[in-house]
Length: 87
Image 1 (cartoon, rainbow, N blue to C red):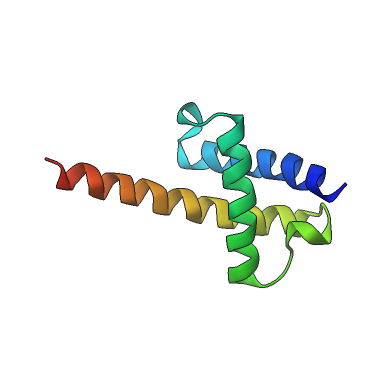
Image 2 (spheres, rainbow, N blue to C red):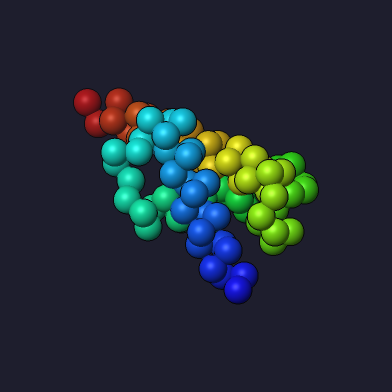
């Protein structure tokens, strides 16, 4: 049951984070799930509480969302730096 929660919550968190960061048109459902799960790991590591493993709560959603937005911001920054250096 835990993996199903991770997939559902990861997809939802990744989708909301992609809407916030403006990358929704570039991502599919698989990438949304990956961004959401990795974001949950990053958010749980940075904040130290409220991970997806504790269940579906508002706190776990917010922590995961913060981590996912940070992840997307880093990816966007790296893409922009690579684009600039290739000119």
